[in-house]
Amino acid sequence: MMKNSLLLVAIALFTLAFSSCNTYHSINSAKNVAQLSANPFVKKVARSVISNISKNVIGKGLTSFKGKPLLRSSLSSLLNTSQSVSTFKNMLTNTYGIPQTKVESNYKNMGTVRDVIGFVAKNGKQFDFNSYSNKLF
Image (cartoon, rainbow, N blue to C red; front, side, top):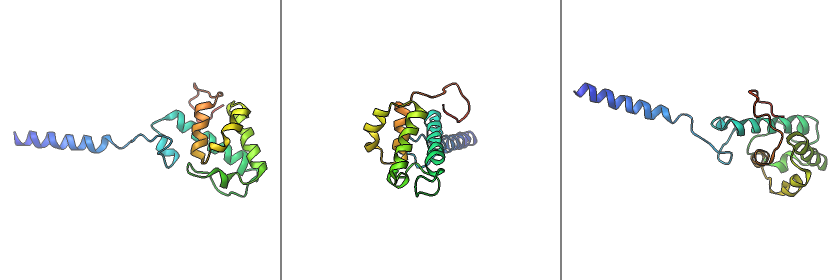
C-alpha cells in the first residue's frame, strides 16, 4: 500500500512539474518572440513585423539603428529620421492593408515594436490565415 501511495505522489509531482513548461504570454508580457508560441497568430504577426522593419527600414539604411529590433525596442530609436518614419508608415499600409489615416492617427500611440505588433494584429486586413508558413501577405 505504501509503494502505491509513493508512486501516485511521484506521478502527481512529475505531472505538475512538466505541465507548466509552456506558459502563455500575451503580447504585453512577452519579452521575446519565442514566448508567443502559445498564440501562433500573434507569433506570425510578430515575426512578420520584425522582418519587415529589418528589411524595409534598417536594411535600406534609412535609420542609424543597427541590429535586429526586439519586442521591447522603442520606435524612436528605430525610426530616427523622417524618411524612416514615412517608410515605416507606408510599410504598414501596403503590407498589412491598414488605411493610411488609421496609421497616421495611431502612430503617436506606438512606443515600442510590441505596440506595432498589437496594432497590426488588431487592424491588419491582408493576412493569409490558411498558410502554414511564417509569411503573412
